[in-house]
Structures are given as structure tokens and as C-alpha cells.
Length: 234
Length: 325
Image 1 (cartoon, each protein chain N blue to C red):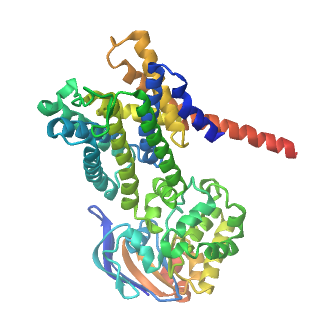
Image 2 (image 1 turned 60 degrees about the vertical axis):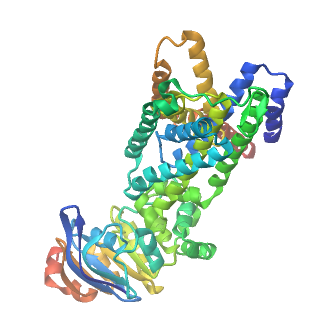
Image 3 (image 1 turned 30 degrees about the vertical axis):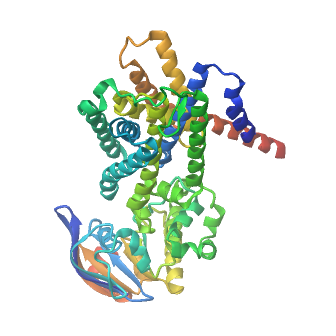
């Protein structure tokens, strides 16, 4: 479904991604793991065209993404849940979700999708009139995921959904990811919480200092010695 | 209630209002219209300090075309509007495309308004420079000329400007209820996230900027034709641009009638200052605007009308809570 071949990117003269190749197939949950500053967020920002790739090819369902403007990426079926949620803090929860269905094709299905999001996150329904900026961290993450689902995406990009959340909330968020992959969503998730993410992912890539160092089935990577030592603390 | 107030306002001048109060009322509505035009984009996070440029284009283009080419304001107005659209696009597009927001956007637009003033002053052979310009009169042997858009009767101007002001409030309402308003609020809060949900940030911002600029330009046309005198200081430059921002913020730029309340306040303030100290202390009014602007932004960011409405809302909520308890 999504394919990156030898993609490089950076900010000004600083290069954050080197020759990255990666593939996500329909129905899969793929994780990108790695330490802080490895280029995980950059990777997702390149895919949703918030920054330009300086080299390489990106395709979504065989259509090139390379020169698509950022506001049209959603028309390719890609929805991005950015790092630190990036909700619209002074809009209500429901208006945030409404904005998730901003594009005309999504607007027609607004009511039906809203019900689906509320079914997935009953808490969002309770808080629908509340300003998004006043939600707790976990609720904000749910709202951000809900907003992305409102466009009816084929592929969901999740950037560190567990960052800054209490352990019990982290559990809940990963439960949501598991539920979504069970429902057939295709998910590309970037995480530092390697232990948890390898439990929900089918496959994973290890990104270090901007380069893919390892890739494979998630259960295999959990048994990999290098990963065990550096990321699982075993 | 709303309609009754409007009827009272519309009939007030017929009840034998003196010329000076009528003039103040007209100016209040005219500036109310201009401030409303500014606030349509200002409240969505785009604080322009350059609206004097659009006001100046409206005022000067129409007067100069009439004086030098004999072109009627009826044709001059669309020409001024087209020119305004071009200037707004040339300034807006690069700003929005390259994400120049907040203070930087304010600075770019601040430069624009000064450029407009300097151009008017520099072209003194055509514009009369800093002395200003007067449209050639068409009122030599009649009280009014529709073709020249000149009327000696203040009453006619009152109704023209009342209609413009109402149209401005109507446009505000339309924008307020639209998906575009929500989208622009979202953009002002998280621009990247807004793009990711499919908002064409550049186009949305440009659209509301054009709307605001065109309305302001039209306000400039009305100002010039009503006053029959234009001056670079009163229709462009930093002073007037700052006054627009000041008025809209002090009145309350998040509520529909806020900018009009702001216009009434700036007008009264200017009149009081004029009567109290005259014209001796140059720049005093601008200094006071600046000071008050800072105080309002810190202590009353929703403006006077915004704060009053909020207090009323709270009291009503408390009352219903007490009634149900």
C-alpha cells in the first residue's frame, strides 16, 4: 500500500533521514521503533508531505506522493496523528472531530463516522462539548486518533501515541491500536515504547540515526538480541 | 429587540438631529464598517497592520480617477477593488504560502501601509501629497449628483453608510456560521494539523484576506465620497492602521457588534481629545491608542462588548442554575 524507496530528508542543512526504504501492506500494523532523535517523526512528516523528501520515491497505492501538497495527502487515504496530538485546543472535541472530516468527500459521512468514533471512544462522547485543550493527555490522544479516523483513511500514521502518558493510559491507547488493526485499519506507528508496540505490530523497522538498521516480524524482533539489550532492557 | 433598535437607529436622524451629532453617527457607522471588515480576518489570528493601504487605495483611486480622467466613482470603485485584490494577493500569497504568521505577518503588513502612504505623498503632482486631495465638485449647481456619487445632504449619506454597515454585519454573520470560520480557527491554532486534515491553508487564508481587504477598500471609497477630502494620514499609514486594530480590539473583535462599539469609543476619544487639548500636541492620540491597546490586550482581550456579553452570560447561567437548584 505505502512504499518508500531510498527516501532522504532533513531540515535545512541538517539531514535526519538517510536512504530509508519501507513498505506497509494493506491490513498490516507496522511499527517503526528507535531512540529519540532517530528520525521517526521526520519519517511520518515526510510521508504526510509536511516536509519535502530530498531524495527517493514515495508511493501510496502505486501513486507517487512526492509532489502532493500536504492538504491533499488525505485524499490518498492517509491520515496523520501528529506528535504531541496537535489538537485544535480552543475548539470543542466535536468540532475537532468535525475538522477531521473537513474534506468534502468526508463531510458527507460525518454523522456515521462520528458514531463510529464515539463507539470506539465513549469518553469522547461524554466530553464532546469540552474544549480539546482542557482534556487529559490520554483523552487528547484519543481525540487526535478520532480526528484522524473521521476522514475514513486507509492508512493511519501514529506518531508516539504513548508519549507522556501514565502507564495505565498507555495500556488503553495500545488497546485502541490493537482494536483498530483488528477492525482492518492499516497502521504505521512510530514508538519509543518498544515493548508495547511490538506486541500490537505485525512487522517492525528499527530506525537509528536516520537509517533503517533492522527489520522483520515483530515477534522475531522481540527475540533479537540487540533489541533485547538496547530497547527491552533484558 | 434587535429589529426595534435598528428601526430607532434608522429613524433617529429624521427626528431633527443636529448636523454635528449626525456627522458623528455617520462616522461611527462608517468606521464600524471598516473595523468590522478588519476583524473578519483579525479575529482568526491574522492581525493585519496594513489595512490603511486598502483604505487608501479605495479613497485615492476613486478620487484621482474622477479628478484626472473624469471617471465616475461608479466605475472607479470596481477599479479600486480590483487593485486592492491584486495588492492583497501579492502580500498575502507569499505570507501564507511560506507560513509567515503572528508578529511577522503584522510586520509585513505594517510595511505595506507605510509604503501606501509614502507612494501617495511621493506622487504629489497627482495626489496633492501630504496636503490631501479634494474631488472636483459636482455640486456647483445642484444638491446632489448621482453620477459623481456626491451628495450635500448628510441624511443621504447616513442611509448609504447604514446599508453598508448592515451589509458588513451580514457578511460577518455568514462567515461566522460557515465551515470556513471553523477551519480558519483550526489553522490559527495548529497550522500543520490543519493541513493534514485536508485544509488548503494558503487558499483559506487568502480568501478571508481578500474579503476583508475588499470591504476595507469599499469603506475607503465611502469615506472619500462622504468627506469629499482625502489625506494620506487619515486614510493610510501607520496611524490609521493602528487605529483600526485598536478600535476592533477595544470594542471586542470576537463579537459581531464589537468593532462598531470600538468605532464609537475611538471616535468619542478623538473628539474629547480634540476639545480638551486641541491639535497642539502632535501624535498624542496615537500615543494614547498605543497605550490603551497594550492595556486592553493584557487586561481585557475580549474587548469591552465581549467582556460585557460574557458577564451577562455568566449571570444568566448563575440564575438558571439557582432556579433549577
